[in-house]
Length: 147
Image (cartoon, rainbow, N blue to C red; front, side, top):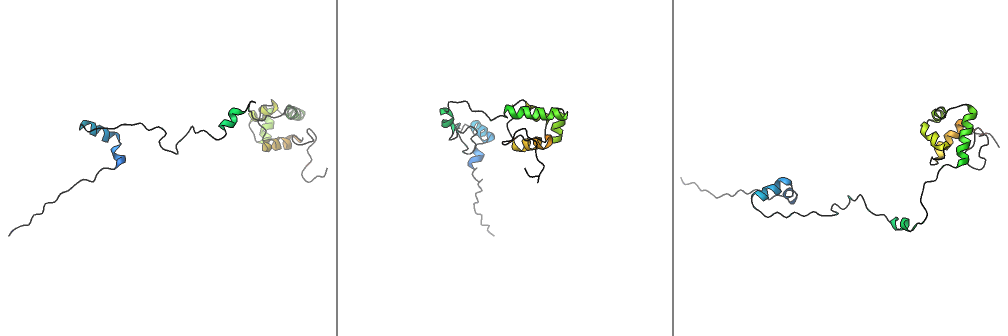
């Protein structure tokens, strides 16, 4: 009996480009004496830009006045302080009644706070005085009451 032997060649699959970039692959190529091309690509990744310039950068550069957040007016700060003291409350007590942090009340009274309509509404209801609109300092009417 004669056996018919065929020559079979088994080859490994070529490595993917991403596998060739690993540190192990680079070190192996260096050991074997193969040429290694190392380049650092700047701005690679496309979507991973953290310091991208926005369209408003030039507009801000042209702006001459200093840009700041709007702060609570002095009148409103004094009204909050006066209303709180009339009721005999500390800043912490007012903050507890408004469900806010004492630092928020402190900032509003010192005119450092950035006006937030929700917080101002809570303070208005707790103190019973108007802090927004035309009639600043006037008593706050209960809901459903006519003027």
